[in-house]
Amino acid sequence: MSKYKTKYACQECGYESPKWMGKCPGCNKWNTMVEEVAVKSSHRYELTVGRQRTEAMPLTQVASEEEPRMDTRLGELNRVLGGGLVPGSLILVGGDPGIGKSTLLLQTSFALAHQGLKVLYVSGEESAKQIKLRADRLGMNTPPMYVLAENDLELIEQHINHIDPHVLIIDSIQTVFHPAVQSAAGSVAQVREATAQLMRIAKGKGIATFIVGHVTKEGSIAGPRMLEHMVDAVLYFEGERHNTFRILRAVKNRFGSTNEIGIFEMKDRGLAEVSNPSEIFLAERPIGVAGSTVVASMEGTRPVLVELQALVAPTSFVTPRRMATGVDHQRVAMIMAVLEKRMGLMLQNQDAYVNVAGGVRLDEPAVDLAIAVSIASSFRDQPTNPHDVVIGEVGLTGEVRGVSRIEQRVREAHKLGFKRVIIPEKNIRGLEVPTGIDVIGISNIADALDEVLRG
Image (cartoon, rainbow, N blue to C red; front, side):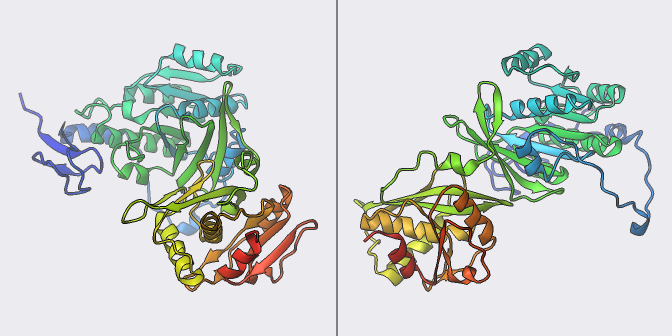
């Protein structure tokens, strides 16, 4: 009787080695090499047998008509996906445990099933009764959808061939295993082979497929990094456990933009869409407090008004602390250096803390001026005007540079009742200003501080 050949595979990046090593040469992580059984050549043949042969054809002969997208009835999810669910797409959904991934996909599957589409929900972590109990707890009218509690990929494929669904949901990919692969469920080999098999099914039958992926303590998808390269879209479901708001963000999307975000609120009846996130983020904004500034940031095609807070206090350490939440730490350090050099603010003996309220992450240069205003406001202990919105990029010489999509930002500020918008002077030219709001153009950071801070 022949013995199976063993190997060691990294559970982070998929690097394979014939012997165990403490540190993976591929990703430089420690204690990630796990012993696995190598797949025999006969088993590899079993995994590929039955596949239809495809022929190469000229690109000019390929039909270019666009397939209609499926409406998920969740506007925020449609926005992140790029306008709806594409038939035949493979979408990976990741997030922390208990964040609401299964709830989001269950609500999506119910909405699709109510439209007459066949939906197969495969759960490797819950039984069919548990799924039904969750649906009853969320108060959903049970639609004619199919539920399967199974881990064996071959049996799952048999049910797919029998039901022929339009949408397939796998919860989760780490619990699915292929019998031909002699490794434990959740290993690199199993996750890679199961995803490849689901990709062939999705593309061959035109089934829109969601797969749920567990995340590591660092926040990345557990398993090999090539898993994110195999799928069409990677969605991260983010949020804090003590906060009711959840953010759905696309880090990869072959059918739309990766800058879009969807915002949901977790309620007793499931996830509810937040159609006006600016109003939610500014609901608890303090008035007349130093260090608080409102900035208009673009999240994809949507302008979002967010409160940016700063706290500057004398340090008790030799090296002052610089902490930033929601914005780039290096960007904050650069802006503080500009304030010291160009404005004469003595910040080298001050601790500085910068925070974006609401748990949103801002990664565009248009928030630079708001960071500078917040830090200067807290340092001077002078409150900003609560009816102002500050927009602009700050250069190393103290100049304020223009930003993109200024009209959308100004309209969003006008819609929420703000009286003034401080923008770069370059963006003034050709700008259509709505009635009831003043737009002030500034060219450098000194003019901005004189305009915003109360004397």
